[in-house]
Amino acid sequence: MTSLRLALLGYGRMGKHVEHVALERGHQVVVRAHTAEPVTADQLRQADAALDFSSASAVERHVALCTAAGVPLVLGTTGWSDNAGMLATAAERIGIVVGANFSIGVAMTVRLAALLAQMLSPALGYQLHIHETHHRAKRDHPSGTALLLARTLRQHLPYPADVHASPESPPSDAITISSARVGSIAGIHTIVADSASDTIEITHTAKSRRGFALGAVLAAEWIVGRRGLFNFAEIAFEVIAQASK
Image (cartoon, rainbow, N blue to C red; front, side, top):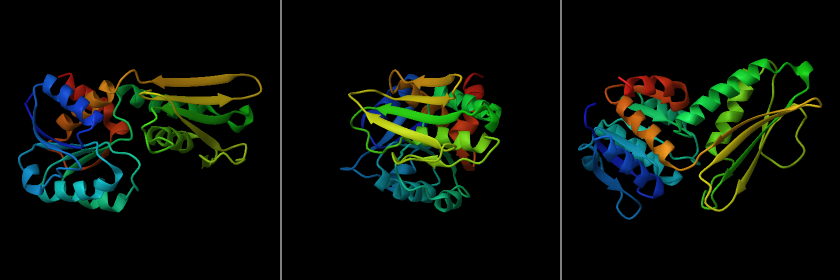
């Protein structure tokens, strides 16, 4: 494995977990940017790849700076307004991996969600719900992962369904989402398919942020030398395969 020079855009709890995993894997961290010390394009040119776990308000600036510096980006910040046009334009010049969650286990859960949805005929009478629980410091809700799971279900269902995160009464065929913010929980996501006959549940529980950090570092290793816009949930198993060589 080639040692990379990495730029960390955001040096909070997640950024420090990413740094720890990166050093374990033999990489160097050449930039540590945060609110008090924002990154510049000149600093980014020292790096082979950048990883963004900063704040929603900083994302567009970081994308623009990485594009100007010609540095590929792993974008893990959530809660920002998804600007597909901006990312697509940037991805004409650099490689970008976007992920609501960089856990390999969550990537597996997304695949299970797609498989479950494909089997849910309207005649079976299942109602779909996603509940997510995170630590009290998490600002956005529902989580990006909950939204990813809901969109995956909707995409693969054999019938149309809306996604509702509001507590107000949704239609019975809607995919509903609820959220809780408790203590220091790293992240729990449960898909519930409930009918009059039985209940199916798929749950992913994150024990620490290490799993997210490992996936992000593996994504940084994978994106170097590539151009285009990629969703981590769609390329996760290709990323794993490269890391296993």
